[in-house]
Picture 1 (cartoon, one colour):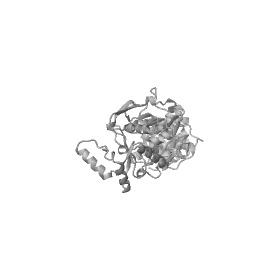
Picture 2: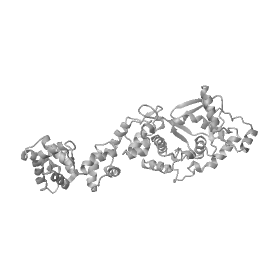
Picture 3: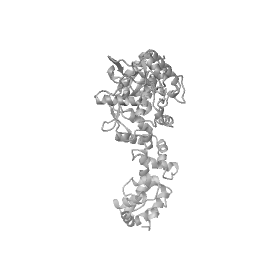
Picture 4: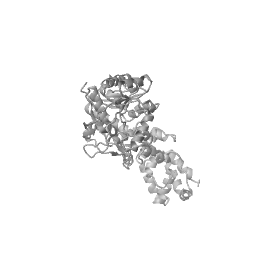
Length: 475
């Protein structure tokens, strides 16, 4: 066993990367980077009934998009593969035989109908609905007879029935469970595939995992896992159980109340950098009050000691605020590249003009998906209702004045726009909203909006003249 820090993210390929899964992957990744360790991706695909085609590829792609590169895993082979549990079944079967030989596990022949009946009876008596151990004391002869008869069976862990177990968790310190609260967990299903509880203990040991960092929902399983480590004579890894992710009403974050998949948030225009930063703060806090962190900065700042015990609320408003910060501060060319898929309803202009349009949009939105609506006036001639047409009718002399003067310029600079605004008051006799409203309406489609020099800068001389001429004598 090496002394190197080795952590793992071990998802099931059930469809998509949950933001809770991203938080688990991120904390494992950050801890490995902080201490110079290895971050391993292992696919826990032993439950064939839940397997979703393409899920592994989606999961790996989501991790790649947000910048979490693993050191070992599918297609990044190390010395501890294979990294798909479905390819490790022979290993698990050997260890099941060892547990049966030590009388630390037993075969259970109860059918699903038997188990349903048992639970119904337990509920009626007000008892806990854990497995009651009815196959725990079957004689060797009875077991052999049932196997000969072709009866299907699972293999269950034979946990102690008295006393308690105490263990240390990095986040929660000392934890004690009475054994009477721990059930005889199924370790091997009737199809020969292991359950999570057996496979993850064996794989964590054989892959030399030093720290298990996972969600709080696995805390109640730790006694079973530690019992397995003891039976195999192995030293267990250190453990850190992360707080639950909660909706704003403090219920557990679930798809029923909104998006929970990383790919959903990316599709809605949240940046990968935002998701990483936001998720990092769900259950962990930095040493100061700072909230904006790049991934490289998180690698230096992260500490398991500052992971909270209490559940973390997934605040969508804060996520939007943070995304807005990133949209405005990240390099413009990068934002343009990210924005292009969200502008596919438009014929995109040359690079320089597109940069100006995206720069305009990113300063006024919270997500990339919102940019389309904000920049729409730059891509098509405005349409006018009756009220707008009245304003345009009154502004005919103003528009003609601007066309005459603009046609004499090689290019339109900010000072040219400001000079023409002053001249409009002198020569055409309009000022205030009677000056600004008609100009902005014709060029941007609304009397309210950006400053006129900014509109001129983005549209350019040819498009400006086209829009003015489009309304002269045409109302």
